[in-house]
Image 1 (cartoon, rainbow, N blue to C red):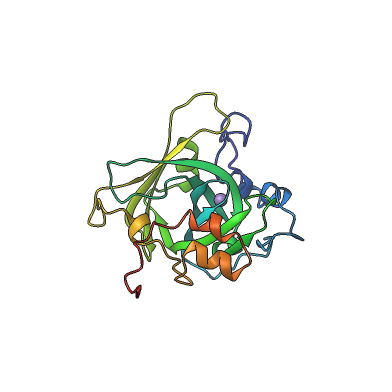
Image 2 (image 1 turned 120 degrees about the vertical axis):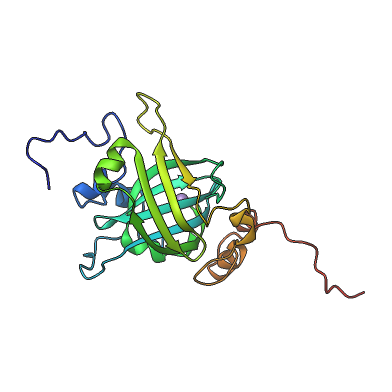
Length: 235
Ligand code: MN
């Protein structure tokens, strides 16, 4: 996979590059952080299907110690992953912080449930959106290296053209990225995280997922939008 004569950046040495693990088809970092006897998360490592032509994406809403949205793009047999504290915004003038995290196995895209408290990422996970993505750049690896990945999303909630852009902070081992919506017919000032808070798989809110899986419902409910007082209350 290495082109002779082309200088490759060193993974994890000076700049953290999403997809570095996938260049070696390794999920070591993901697996080292988790005890699979204790967490229901998938271990990964099964061979990706060669027949799948489309690249999947998933956004998982995760109420751990802090609420965030894990934004994951399938690339080279793994899910490249960024943690987006405020979630995606459809407004092109709003740039959302996206912290790169370790590559996840493809099977992780189907995970919705509860990670036990005390385990890595302990809390409730929802499949908030999923679908397919396509690059808007000729070379995805090059775009990841230069920190300018443009792509289209074909999800249930997220559509159209987007970008992940690395911010120019020299020397930081965990450089920040920004998730930005491009101006197109899918751009909007509506807050999609508030308007569409439910799982695309189960239609549940975080509190319902926690309840169904023996999780902490009080903690999970903090990630759900505030609801109005019940209307059908009888005297
Ligand atoms: Mn997470």
